[in-house]
Image (cartoon, rainbow, N blue to C red; front, top):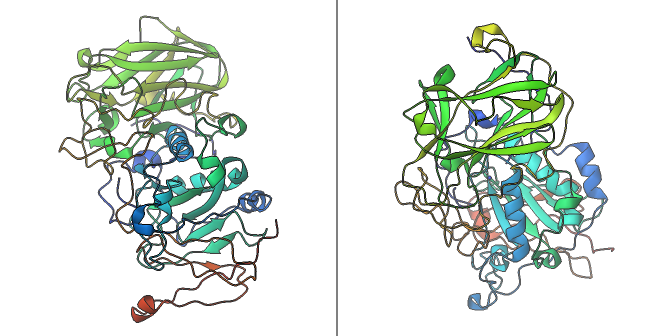
Length: 500
């Protein structure tokens, strides 16, 4: 019987391929990212709504179509930076799609917003056909609370949208399209101004997301791969969950990635009841622990040690590094991480992520029946100053294609990315050059109204058949003929003239 690991009830800010309006694909990771859906739409906390109400971001629509001549050609630099930040700091994202030069469907004279390069779609695996709110809600909440700083002009997620240009009390609205209520992705739009940034303009000014942490007792603990305090970063399309093998009857694995930056990585977030020297071991199953040089990082007492482990030589518990023990301080902001990047790696070099065992010096090894894993978790603390991955960079920064591919269907094909085992295109680079939602996946344009206050007849992004209505609507019910024929009423928010 495995010990249960107590963890703090922190805001789980996790992150995330399939196209913005395409049907969902099978997703290998679910339980490891604490996936939970709730009935009904995105429930934005009152505190988040209040913070959002203090901010204003001008809405700029996509512009004229003109046979695609006005399309940007790729993600803008600012959108690529935001994409990378979300992949760095939010686990559970399937992929992040972006640029797509599409013509508007409701207003064919306009192009879809993805053609500007200022919009991204953060793909979140469905949970039983519903939006996974544990994964998606924190991303949307984070963006609302930092909208003015980042330049977020518009968000759609799980039947709800947020418009940065609206007056306080009128920014949140219901978004209820039957064919695409945005349950499998967050649609996010940047302002024109911030989309031009070529360096990260907000990272040092926002509070990074927080994660659950496992409490390590004074004698140590065993933490299995499915505990809440282990977070899986990068595209979930490249993580695999195996049952019936490994410690406790299950493990995760991915393939080594030929790159100098990680594409997928996992991190155990820890808080210690007592400072001391601890032996650190990982459990390795030979059938899945194949890679010969796997990079681990151990953050302890304010320092980070990097070491490499030959997983192929392991069978059962394997000590990390040549050091006999690591000195951990009491409290939190300490973690152990494992990464998939390795230059010149061969194909099919599996990296196993299974149980972690910490044993305090002088104490007997903690085993499942010893009860060493339980204990109250410490107070909440932010992820390290270097972000969720520590010093390491995130997926998509270079987007270089490696010889070693990741198994699985992968995301939409980028200019370069991880090749799936079946040859499917994988992760796109940060430039986002060829990354985009499926053709005809256009959200509506919530642009500011004309000076006379008349409501815009919103353009869709290109065929998602979506709709929205204000929770504080001041009138104007617009019905589109094609959707009326299908028996679907589309209510539009009557927008007030901008007052700022």
